[in-house]
Image (cartoon, rainbow, N blue to C red; front, side, top):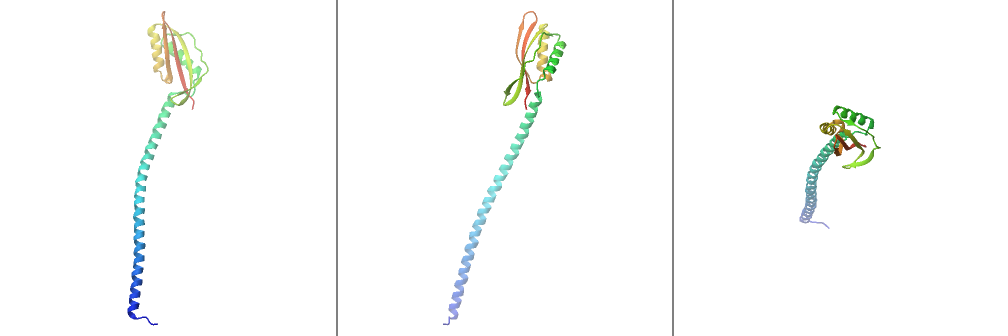
Length: 174
């Protein structure tokens, strides 16, 4: 059986059209996939920019927090050395012309201040002198850098030029 020339041309045309349809379908499917991938890539790049900004912000916050911790830690001595603080207190008492009648350092107690572990020594300082000198003594303790981690809890002034000062000295427990 012999196929005519017209039939071959029609058959060839049908094959070419079918091939073009298959190629077109593949092309449009890949074009759709490419558009989808480009959209996903754009969203990922936008997300990456936001995450990068967030990371930089968090790193800045970490640096700031670390700096704040270092600054706060510097204000607190590593430990409360009773001999040193005793010497400082007697030196300030001498400079302010008051008598520090007695001084005893109890064992440091553990506490937390703002979530930071500290040791604290509570002292009671009985002093005698003029009211002006007692106030100068209190002010010097309050403003002296060596006592930056000190909190004066109470001052009880009695007649006759005597006072009892209660204070806490904090030490950082890293």
